[in-house]
Length: 249
Image 1 (spheres, rainbow, N blue to C red):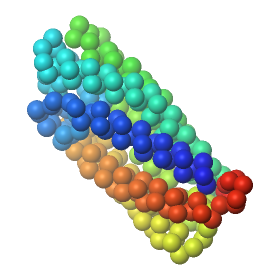
Image 2 (image 1 turned 120 degrees about the vertical axis):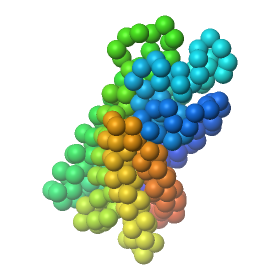
Image 3 (image 1 turned 180 degrees about the vertical axis):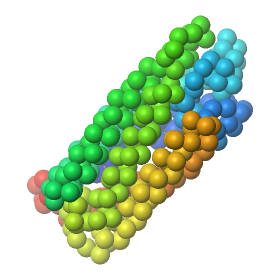
């Protein structure tokens, strides 16, 4: 339990660092790319050509265009740490809980691990494409959209699989050490949040093809609520651990 809690703390903490860095962007257009409202960092992940990059970040070789490009570059370097963190949490923590239950749970856990691995690999490729797109002299064919689409598609698929762990506890396994009433309440908070976020996110990701990706950013709210609920419950569960600190799951 301790390792799950610390991994989630690291994931949330690094996400806050990325958000703080991204808040420095001076972006004046709310929706340039894929129909996404606000969230310039996410919009950048769906850029298809240089005109969309300039629309979002302003023109290069002048301000605030150059400053915005530098901030986005920094975001990608931060992402090199964030990607392994979220992959490890989904693959090891949530995926590990599935492995300790029924055959159906193990199958669902397998799909989760495959999905989050594809998402993480696509995320690294997306970062490489964004570095190319930030170069004003770039005229190649490697743009972030295709990798961003794959990343978000498989991330939300993995999130949907994760919801099963909480909605069907303990039939599909459990992430918590105790079966208290508080744990059951936490499951029924986290499960719907994750499932709702996954469904909205899938709609938004597919909709981005037709510039209707606004549901993707809306999906992040229930996801954040689910993560906050999970973090709170894991923090409370720590007191039930054995004194030697060895996790009970």
